[in-house]
Length: 253
Image (cartoon, rainbow, N blue to C red; front, side, top):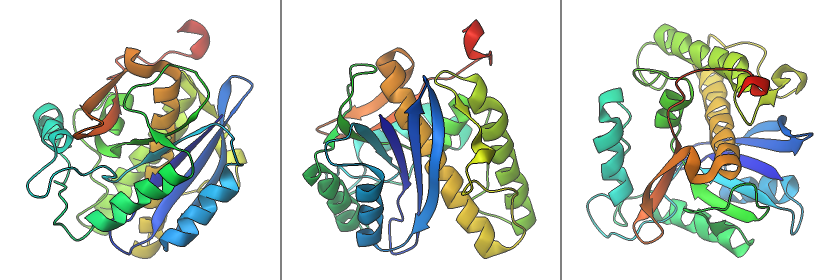
């Protein structure tokens, strides 16, 4: 089973890409990348997942948009449940410029056999796609009181916030179930957080995609037992891990 995370650029900007594998009952980082053109992203998907190989692809973008105007139900629910953490998402409707790009990306995955999975039977192999949202996932996985604000602001402040995310990923994800170990053994994992703007944005995209991939694995492993789903297949939906209150090694879970 593989778990792909795609921090999809809603416009023409590059997208962060992550691939995790399920090896010996734990997760292993296979690849972190970044590509711009949709064709290149889909080629990366095709290279990462063999024909008929089971996998979940988690996309940070609205791939199901039924409404012509306004906001989707899951968008509204992020503000209801996560607004206090500053983690409400941007509204999506079919009249917005990015809608064609994000919806068509979901359709391209569907044509490859990746069906939407707002419900799932835990640990059952299959080919699925889900929509995810890193900000509330980060708040819940790492038991935070607000989002990490590495998207906007002064470069030095963004770097400090991204460094926090980097440390949470390396220190805490190995203690959760499913566990993600040996990140630094993968050559594509950043060895440090850059200090320049362009390099910082690239690292941000890659770490966001890693969170997306981990949420895919967490959804597959636990299903609704330890996740919540905002919305459904008719309204659009977002899968978010439930809040984790204590961090213990797997053997003590």
